[in-house]
Image 1 (cartoon, rainbow, N blue to C red):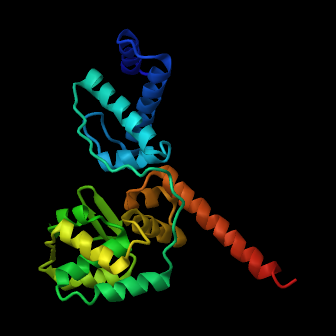
Image 2 (cartoon, helix red, strand yellow; image 1 turned 120 degrees about the horizontal axis):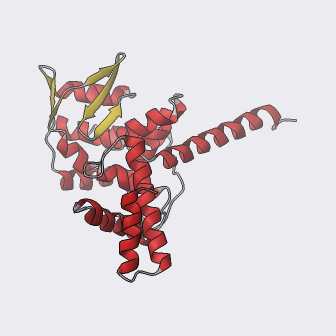
Image 3 (tube, rainbow, N blue to C red; image 1 turned 180 degrees about the horizontal axis):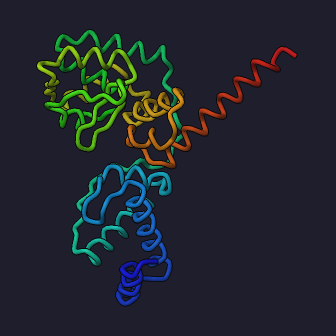
Length: 259
């Protein structure tokens, strides 16, 4: 345990916190340092969305997540005089992966294509295929498509996605002028339109996880899927196990079902 964390423990004890509360807060801080090490961030400079995603693999209820963030917030204020102003909608419970089948995704795509505005069409397709939130898309007002060994990608600030679907690439190419994609949307109205298309059966996080799942299906290693999906390492590992188990079931069924 680092010196600052030990000092934090002593501080909490002096403030009258119970041993259970101290242990809970220190454990959250240790998770925070694992997060910093994994992504290469610093105590005063890190991606808050990635932090929540990273912690969600351990803290699977709203209450436990809020407690962990409270501990990290207290530690940063104590050790670095840094104010963590994180605001997050925490899922009430850890939920199983919901697979969105290709036929269903195609159905949503065809509905999205009926939008008359190119920008709205592109934004809806990015939500469907890349799992981007309306607020993230709103940040991509002007950007260039990057290429990683001829594979198109978005790599802007905190938003990184490999473009593995023809539908996404074509929709962005329609908006490209002089190498720049110009995209202007209203996040709230985009969200309303999106759920008119998809209904209430799937959440925004389901589309994000399905994007990561399709990267896994294509054989990408876990660390690359983490980097280009925004999901935590543990969550991607869970999706990888889901894919492996599914594959084993299919193989066994194919080989033995007719015996």
